[in-house]
Length: 435
Image (cartoon, rainbow, N blue to C red):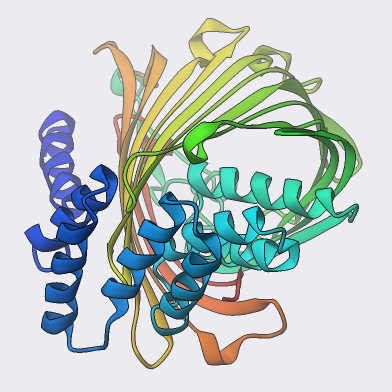
């Protein structure tokens, strides 16, 4: 199948996955969102009552509509009572946490405000919106004069842990067929990823705060037996704007090692902007610009630009949807090593009444190279890649602040360069924040 045709088909599949399901995003639910945004309280209450009758699970939407109305009219004491009631019966409904956080913060209930932010961060998938929530949580904890600790752990058995070709031969054109050594082919193995960070408050003034962050990330693969630690220091400055918007700007510097060899030095600036669109939707934009020096591979030194846009939507009290578009450009000193990678991701998270949390995610992307594939004169190399992931965790199985989560992920890459043509099956165990 031609690469261009495959890309068109997969783009249509991703678009279909990205479209909110008709059952969850009913006209009535969208109408409730519009009525709340417009301050049409009586209409919102009527729509909420209709949604509650259809769901048959109590007055959840009516309580939520009342919480928004009280919050918008400055009655935060009443708003938190209703918002916290919604959270009790709909623990995955993101908009209720936003209302509860803002009003607890306005009432001076710092611990409760931080608690709501902790849950909000736990609910959001990886991407710009969660980055913004994490930074806001960090700022709130620092306002209490506390250092902030966080960490993560992933253990991933994989059929192709090093993401290499499964082929043993390469077509050398007029030179004939060449042999690909086993060391350059895909290897079964286990990937271990661990990391942690600590943030210290440096300054806080009104709607602005500055902190210092130290972070370490460790990667080890049984395929290449390479121990790869990395260390980062950054100075994020956060600015709270009107209407719940927030901006974070952070200069940073990091180094990376392979065993005892320094392989990467990086310094740059990252920024995130989080904007509420409606009561149920938030838009977040992130951008990183950095210079990278690779002492052992100087031809790969250069500049990196990494940008992403995410739209997070609460489709129903127990269903969240996130769409992310991302672009990464590597401007290396050697022109033929430059790449541009474009990726689109759609993800659904569903909380079942029993406490089971299910996730489904699909991604499709294309990578553009500034050189032809080996032994090819047909233009620059292009790679098409797709992945599908399913994960599950349970609220009753929390271990302290974490919930173990198991997942399966399939990745397939097509390319006119045999070394970029591969597939992989991963079964992973990770820790996610409990809520």
